[in-house]
Image (cartoon, rainbow, N blue to C red; front, side):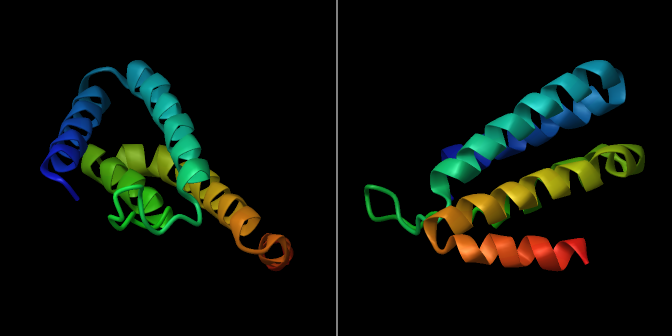
Length: 116
């Protein structure tokens, strides 16, 4: 991860942590926008291993981990309220997007097993 990406990640963490303490309504709005943005990023990067400069791209499932880390830093109440929905939405998007690139049968099988 580049220095700029690390700074951006730290800034995002600080921003959401501050919102979770001071303005829960704005936190919720911003969190929904961020989830939408992550879903677009997942769709774009699913199945890609390298960028146009031949640098490795982290797996799209790392986005789920990053989102949960942000929630954990915001406190237990925030985790209890948003973690499950966030995990479910982003993981489903990862599965759907990756299966479109690899083999659509993967997602159908995963979905059936999840429903059992």
